[in-house]
Amino acid sequence: HVEGDLDLEQTLFTEDQILSRLREMAAEIERDYDGKDLLLVGVLKGAVMVMADLARSLDRHVEMDWMAISSYGSGTKSSGVVRILKDLDTDLAGRHVLVVEDIIDTGLTLSWLIANLRSRGPASVEIATLLRKPEALQMDVDVRYVGFDIPNAFVVGYGLDYAERYRNLRCIGTLSPHVYS
Ligand code: PRP
Ligand code: MN
Ligand code: MG
Image (cartoon, rainbow, N blue to C red; front, top):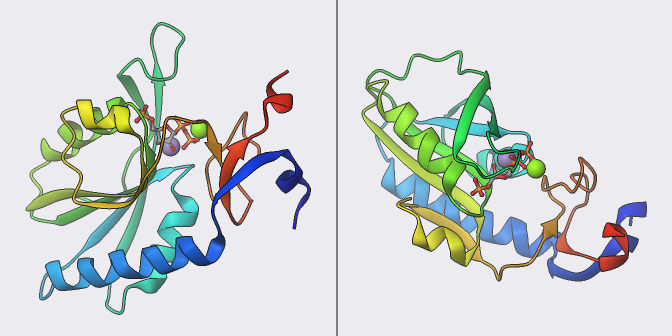
């Protein structure tokens, strides 16, 4: 246990539950991409843990690359206006790309990102996310691999932050209200 666990109201997923779901997703991905080169694209910073554990669950060669993007606009995080802070090092032409995310909340970040990646001439672009919130279902984001659908609560841990904290928790949980005040 680390200090941050004390700030959790409820644990939603233990480390074991997360890892076992990622192994199931990895098995699906292995089947779907059999005989094809695969490039995993992680979205910094939240996807770091998912990328590390999903990639290590894959019993095949993969490449990994990273993008850092930032939403901005009317001051709110999910404006849908996105700016690239760090682009890929990899040329996507003809590549099979699987975007790896920790969570899809409104889906705005990812719908922008997918359109951006598709414009680079890849052979395919799909999405794997550990978590998805119901709101994302309203958006035009076609997600191929989903770990868990979760209710609309603020969750942290396993890469997910609140004000840059809690990313290093091994589990995923809801944050206690006392932390906000
Ligand atoms: C979080 C999360 C997703 C995105 C989902 O990232 O990791 O990338 O928000 O939100 P959306 O579906 O509403 O667009 P954030 O912008 O907080 O950056 P971080 O990964 O560095 O924490
Ligand atoms: Mn993120
Ligand atoms: Mg964040």
